[in-house]
Picture (cartoon, rainbow, N blue to C red):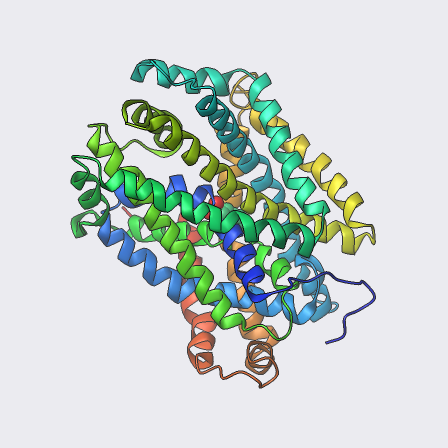
Length: 454
Ligand code: PHE
């Protein structure tokens, strides 16, 4: 297809494509959400189901996003408008941009907490605190507006400055440095954690398949985790796909990214649970696990000062490579649809997402009383994006490729116009026509509470 009137930037190398896409996928979702969700849902058994979903549904959705983005050479909204002119499919792209706004707002708020904790690690701020004090340290911090706001804007500014530098000189360049760094830090932490005396409990907590804990809702949890973790369903990978050169192999890229994302989730579990068990702590949930339990552990552990810095640095890096990809969805949309420069588009996106972001940060303190359907602003954005917009978007994306674009167009894009062998096409087509839409319809209905599994 023609390049169109807009001159587009692109990823310069295969490694750059994988680093950027894996950078998007690997984030807070892997490092604090996955270990806890897996632990609560039968450990090893959950892991097996999660893996099946990543390969059966995640990779097909990812490939569909790449196919749409690379063939259209446009942002998430513009891609649908270009491939299906005059048809309402562009609504899928609009929904993706809306999801990006919401995720950017609450994800950057949490990423900001990570910067505070990195700072506390550096100044040795956890030293001598009891578990109870560690707990109040966290809630005092998110409960007062000023510091979380400062960190929020700090994180937003770092994200924006990388985006402004461009696709190749910004996004690709930093991901190529940050992703290997993340991997090294994670491996160091895993080695430390699994060699602690008493760490075995954590290893079996994570890996021992406990099939009695598997219920229908566990299965849906695994599916939801796969979606959020792989960054699929909102056009992040349509946007990144539009920067992938025509000579790259989309199939092997999707496969490598899915493996890297899963590997990091498992390594994060291996870094966290053995340490939690070694220090006789209860595997706590969500935000508490990372921000309360871990500083507790670092404080008691030899060399904890350095491991704390390494961990929060790792978490910040992982979050940054994800916020870059979320903001880029909005920046590409504004820049191409309004015909403005990347710099201006970035500033506009930052201003608009920050408005929503400020409300999100305040929803932990001065605005905690403001609720919609009983949810705070943070919870509402989190719920609406993850439980409604991502599944619905993923559903429409696979339906678009399966029933509108068609098998032959998809084959052409995935095989680079016949140059690559794509033996997986029959399976891919079956997955996007049937397996993925049906499974996604399940999470969506469950998320809305329209159907209930015990
Ligand atoms: N995949 C990212 C994570 O696991 C979050 C994300 C979701 C990023 C959707 C982009 C789009 O942290």
